[in-house]
Image (cartoon, rainbow, N blue to C red):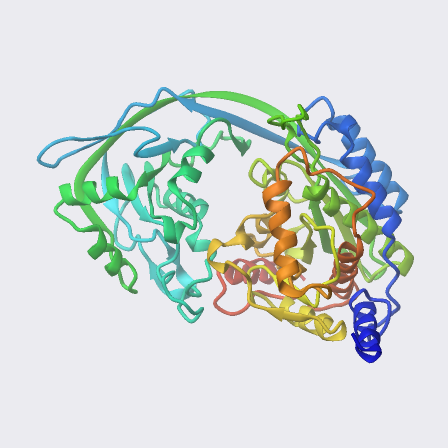
Length: 554
């Protein structure tokens, strides 16, 4: 490499790391690499046994986090306490009857596991549904901002919805459709479909599995719906939810539709067009199973840096502290899933950001640091907070969520999960320009990763949240090296005992990301703007409503 090119590469690396060339309102405090290493090493040590929620080691884990929060100058965030209790329910379903569909020329019987999986959000020991009318409701979407309602004109009380997976325009290569085409929206997530069926008063909900629009095979569905299922506890034990939720193999769904004198392919095509109306199938479904119930409590950790001028306006930084605890042993007999990358790195970033903001001095607005529990069990810690916020969501400006930062080199680009959804994109574009970082399309946008991490619990209630990481185009080795780095982690360490800290880690990329997060969060904390979701986004209406209520109150 020529000397001029080497100097250019070094200069670009320094800019990307935030050491030079950034035109920001105030100097950016340096990222404390030694602190990052020390926090990851502490939280992923064997004596914390993988940081399992509600485990014998939870108290020691939380003590370690609180000590770090105190050291970074934070104050307790819950009326003098560092903690928010998160009550949970775990249920394991068993004793399934066949899923029986009657009303055609002969009864159809489908086997659990092979043909369907099922469970209930309701906290009851037994579930029994008999002769619930089946209604094909297309993609099960009710999106008023798009003038789209797959439940229009039907009363779903006592009925079971048969629902297609993903969005109505998922097959498009581009993002030009009403539901952003290939990029999945919240309406395409299976969780939304079950939630909407409950809002419509349905007794049950059955999603038709299809590998391409689901983005995973039936084996993933079957394994995910086996064993314990974890939920946030509610005062009514989820009595307002459907009696059962289910997935069914596409072939089984085709048999059901054929028994109703319908064709699944033809109905799928019709459901992809605006104005689709639900189709009663003239068939009835019956199903029963039992559920064992376990209740427990874990804790979120909450710290705050009060704002100097607007202390009742809040900017969030968040990361989950939990991991899997003890897990399947590897060939050496190691059965501790230490979670160094996932998410010891995110917790280390949270502490480092608190230290950086302390060094920069009080911001205009308050800055809240949230260490979630039970992310690995389905975002339960963040979901509980979003249902029971310690700081009003209508007065929460936005925030940054941090999850699993890979050791490795500096990148030339930023990976933006979720695409251009909100006015936060303007802040990102400005910062990326200052740091000479490229932004580009998200890999695998059809998989809906924006809806699968803790920020989503806040986003779906109207709070704009950043979820960005350094990209795969590395300064050293380019895109090939970046993809190899990510693949190596996923294949060899993700959710395995081998996700351990090492003093040999290359921390440059993690330092780059923490610097980026500071530059994204601090303008929100120092500013007076209230970023909103883009017009037409699925979360815009709820943000407009919550902000209007605050404005009218004054």
